[in-house]
Length: 290
Image (cartoon, rainbow, N blue to C red):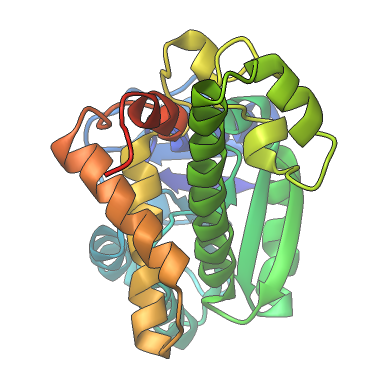
């Protein structure tokens, strides 16, 4: 396929490289990032979108997505797949999908889970919204860039799944970090804590696969000075999206709201910016009960 890829940063770059390595003709555009191996650089987003079978975007937020969509939709041929892998608010995803569909495009919102490591390894999970026909075109590309793709429903459903998932992740990581900090103060060895919780009812991805305690459990960012991984500021972005969606839908999410407040404090007023989101553990280690 001829593929345009717009947004070649830490996530988009490896994703585009995997598509090129699989034999697709990939043209890329990014304002600052270098082109990954196998990707042909073009001078604008519209250049990346013209005469393609599919166009993939990986962008920072809904405002930028809307701006790029306004530039490329009109130059894309009818029947082209417009696959947005950004994590944005549900309303922006739906608005862009409606505009794309009105021009005869196949629109898919497909945010991802798996981080930079998953993007490089081709093991991402895609949460897709859009029509069955649009998903059918996008799915073979998801199989190259990831290990799983779930068609969650109509446009916006992919974003809804992503922000619900990451609200759970933010909440459970805070709980895991609190528990380790409490175990320290109770004199409980961290390895013993992990051995019990990882095989008991406290089991979670935050504990078992991404343990925030250095030297405990599988290798994770905590073993590398909390270098991201999944940056705390990105977790904050996703938590804010979850609360924006909760406000719009009149959903009561008190733990999601409190997790958002804690990550806001951590990122904006403490030393969390640029750290992995699991660096909440050293934060709690240093704190007493207030």
